[in-house]
Length: 494
Image (cartoon, rainbow, N blue to C red; front, side):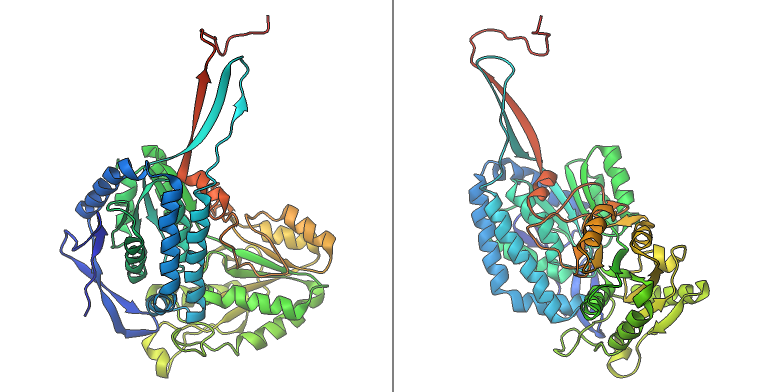
């Protein structure tokens, strides 16, 4: 069995704990991918020390030169796309056609971040005094701790790591314990691209390491993607220790289908949004809100399509939906089916663990649809992170928007309609960071802001130009060439 290592200060090193954990294939539990470091506080300390020292020189490298390294990383990601996609599928389950897209997102982010190193613009403004100039610049923050979830093991960390490096910060990356191999490949690629020693560090382990990173006094910023509960806890620590943090957390995303929508298009979009990545996306379509005039028709057609989805190992070309990531997530799906039935929701299809043949050695669950779900039900309110879709009936557009907004999350949203007035009203009134018109709730692009409101985030936006607001600080400079003392902030209008 292959044994993997941490990457600290440009070296592949064994964990100082001497401990390891096994990573298994969720589609085939007998397939053990390898043993990965079960790191501890001493490993975190070593990575932070390396990153802090490397920051002294990395921040001084001209930003476009940093961009050249990221461009090279994009080329390597592209060269290793097929290999990395297979590795990702093997350790987290989603089909290869999805993991290829995951890698492509990293490629796009490499190139975008590289190009932005020539556009880290400051702003200048006129001074209120003569012979004085006012300037402002973006400057790096320092050592960044990055903590991410399993579902997009290359794309999501790329949204944080690459702009952080482009901005001149150094990084310590702790991937999910369910996708450590993808983290190893990420480190290999940055190493080959020429990232200097200590600038990027990888430490592997369980969730408790997140606290070690957040609590460390020499970590200046935390970039987190994961559950809302954990995000809130990390945010509390960051508040107490005065660290900047970017929190990308849960979602319970609504798709609205109006009576005038193209139903075939809307149903295909819902299938992809609800069951792509086995529903394990923060942007997954987990709530479908349908106008009463087409409610029965949509449910009938949707169920007919969902029951025909090919569920199986993601490494098989015919697979349309893979397994959930582990036993705990499978148990969560089983529990929520019982919750839905107990609450009085109507089970339309699915609801069971798949068994027999290839299914017995994996964590497979049927695409599941509940109808007649009301806004007070847990099915409607709580993030499940699995292939379970809740369908609710709306009387009209205002009611649909009310239902969409009646939860604690606000990440992504969608409406299918051919009425331009309804579309713009939805854009204005839905409480979400992202709204799609005639598209599902998934499909973010690397060059656009990504993030949510309410319980989904803390105001930051990854992706696009806005991500650099996370990983830089503003420095204001005043240059006085008057030759004398000019007293600022004194009433000069007498």
